[in-house]
Length: 137
Image (cartoon, rainbow, N blue to C red; front, side, top):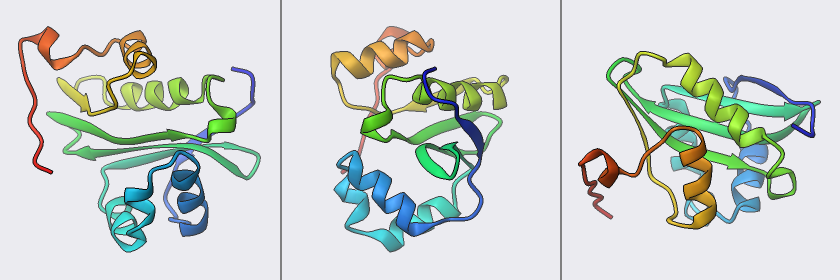
């Protein structure tokens, strides 16, 4: 990891820094509805943040019960800090926190970059596990 980061629980929602991070990665579906995003954070199972000094570099947010299922809802890293191990560190922190959970799931873009990232962390596409997924949009 090229940057020295600290990963800690994100307990105090700071709307300005969260909206800045989501805007930086282009997730406008969230930034267009900041009140819903706040509610999502307040009702999440766990949120971890990666900081360099006081600067928020990345965040991972999970929902679920923490015993039978964990769903990784969001993982974002500031584009200027990507490919420096921050996303990997955030993901490993979640996987370490929930070692006995059978189903740790996520939905992501189907690109070579994202596929390689999640497969490097031991994730499989649902079809590789004999499953399929559904989404109501």
